[in-house]
Image (cartoon, rainbow, N blue to C red; front, side, top):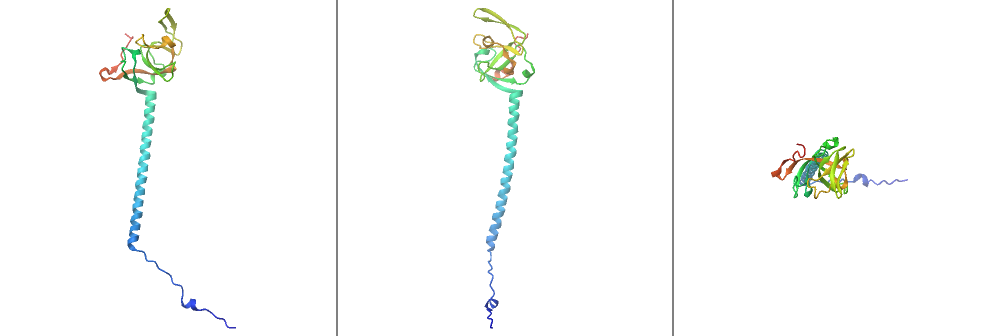
Length: 200
């Protein structure tokens, strides 16, 4: 039995194709890779700086909020009810936001109070009675006297003829006091303390 063997595959082994790469292409490829790496580093640096600045701004805003809410804040007040102490056209007052929380409210203090009739409105009045004080005021049928209850103050505007105050809505709870005005910072010509009204 004759076995035929194909020896052509032995005599002609398969050839391997070699692809030669263009040196210029390789160089451009490496340059592109370095550029992308450089841009990536720049993007990471920008992102890091952005995050750091955002954190700084957030901390500043938090500090500003705490200061404005619980320590001191400038407030614009206007209207005729505090004439002649305050100007009708408007004054900017520096307000102490914390001492009243410890009961440090005295007769004659100018206070900012949330209106008992309209929670969205802030009134600027003067404290004329503390808890336990007897206060008298005019009503249609004569003079009326009452005692300020515990935890309340009696407030009135200096311009009694146009002021809507405790004579109309009664004593005000301490909890409605937002702060005490202690200094006028605008207009500059009237910069300074609000004075010691009624304490002579």
